Amino acid sequence: MRNIIDMTNDAAVRAADPQFGRDGLNIVVATNHESSLANAERVALAYGRGDAMSLPGMAIAVKDNIATLDMPTTCGSRILSGYVSPYEATAITRLRAQGAVVVAKTNMDEFAMGSSTETSAYGPTRNPVDPARSPGGSSGGSAAAVAAGITEIALGSETGGSVRQPAAFCGVVGVKPTYGRISRFGLVAFGSSLDQIGVFARSVRNAAIATYAMAGGDLNDSTCADVPVPTTPEPVEAYRGRTLDGVTIGIPTEYFPPSLDADVRARCDVAIEVLRGLGAKIVDVSLPHTELAIPVYYIIAPAEASSNLARFDGVRYGPRAADVSDLREMYQATRSRGFGAEVKRRILIGTYVLSHGYYDAYYKKAQSVRALITRDFDAVFASGVDALFTPTTPTPAFKIGAVTDPYEMYMSDIFTVTANLSGIPAISLPIGRVGGLPIGGQIMTRHFDEPRMFHVAAALEAALGGEAHA
Image (cartoon, rainbow, N blue to C red; front, side, top):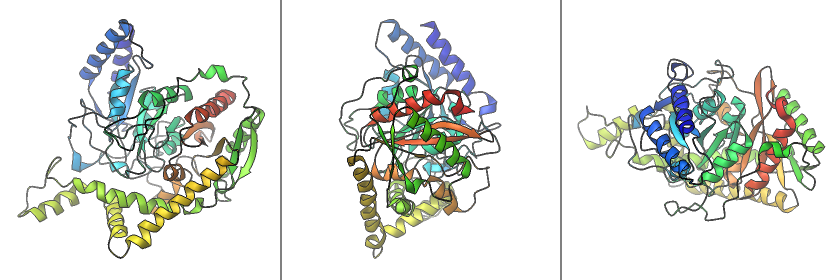
């Protein structure tokens, strides 16, 4: 029992360390040491009674757009400065029930709109691997928290790759479960048909345990699927020496274009040969509509964002502009001052594509192409392919401030958005380093086949061993 409290205290102290705050790597935006210890004491008492828990005493960090009762939830935005939610996310409640203790809230791109954690009102987070570089985004703070050793597990959110891309940049494991596997209740909405809560961890097994701890139906979320939750996976050590006989892994040609960074391609080639050496059958496959994923995503996501963010107007919660003469001016001033440039850009794009005369030409057509992208995956899996392997990102982590063109930034998600558009599960895990920078490999499986995804990932992780971090 005492060990659980000590573990939480150690993690809470790390989270509050100035090197991880605004004056250092800018990973942590809020802590509550007193609340963390009180929750640890409750866990210790329950565990001492013999209550079954899958994460007893495990400290976790939580992205700033997932509602918690004991720390602010500001989405990295001035428009929610100081906001504390009156309710907690279902995912957090379930993790607490399994013995996890929340010790920190982490930095993020404002309202999860970004791929570098540079759009945050708190300023950019720095990558613990190389502080001159971005940790990715929008969940850069959570990825960095795990990479820096603040916690073993952290929660992020995914709309177009915001867990897997920063996981690859920071050299940790990142999981996007099947859409509907984990409740979105308490996750501040960006794109409702795309958003999901995901997991960062230092190992595939810990990522799986946390994913399963949050999974299951939820009456508070009509999009959450009431399907059976898989059992806790075996320890990673159990996969050492185990084969992948009978497993067919597809390599999509569209994810290995000539423009792919040569170092990323080289590490992926090594990983593919490792998978082959484990007994997996490797086959080339095609997902022909992949090239349309980015334009489709950047129509659908901003359209949904323009609707979801309409509620942030200074009337019900958050700061309100005071030096105004009427209600209309108050709305305009509050939103103009409260939202950053990237959020404004996406609201304007979304409002445009949903406007009269453009809805059919843009939003409706994008939804039709989204269906084609989903059919591509369905067809490949129906052909006998069990899993897909791809790079997670087209390049290693870029330097902070190096990418200023919005389109170029959007393209960093080229290999991740397809899983969000189709709703399938995907995981990124470290497969090596080049010049000291981590490279991530991605595994995708059919809907609700997280057990297969974790099985292949754990086998690859065990086979790579220290090579994944070398």
